[in-house]
Image (cartoon, rainbow, N blue to C red; front, side, top):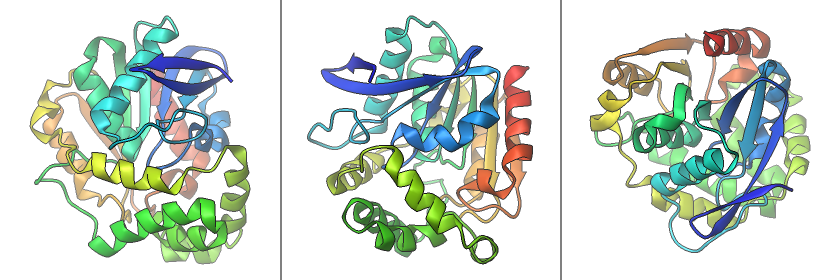
Length: 267
């Protein structure tokens, strides 16, 4: 598997497709392989996806995994591949990493999609303590008892009516877990500790590249008010709200949603 070195650790990455480079940044405790089901919808780009530290085949160092450190990992990957500027698409925690990447290394980001994410800080809308605890506990269970982990995480990712209409979704998630090594339970704690200090709210006005914000109207992990907050703070941003979708908004209508995103990315 191809790897690059970033601040003394190895970061595993993969590429797929042909075209302009598109860096894909995955969310909380998920390996880069979680992008695989979406790659066919991102045709026309060379998709570059990677395992954040602590996940997949990337190294799993000690200590908290801060968003700033993970943004530097992404920057080092861009540089290690000999690329100057790339399009960036980050989902959830990956959207937080994308924000920091655009702030810390603006010369590397030409345009950016921020999916179901938050700017952090005191002004951000926060999920309930129950939801956040279930997310961390469920993520830990994924490698120990996958079925129990999925049962805990599933209602966080999708509205109840979507789960009822798509009973096969649990099987699809279970199958998807075979695509990469399971994330160690301790990674969830290291990520949670690092996320505590994340806050871009007062710096978002510094982002000058075009930004598309995508959010599900029924997201309970990252409440949709965060999408409006990000749009208010970034001058060159547009908002694509999907009213009936939850946190995993692409599942609501994969073809239409990805067509909207890729059309914007090609502009």
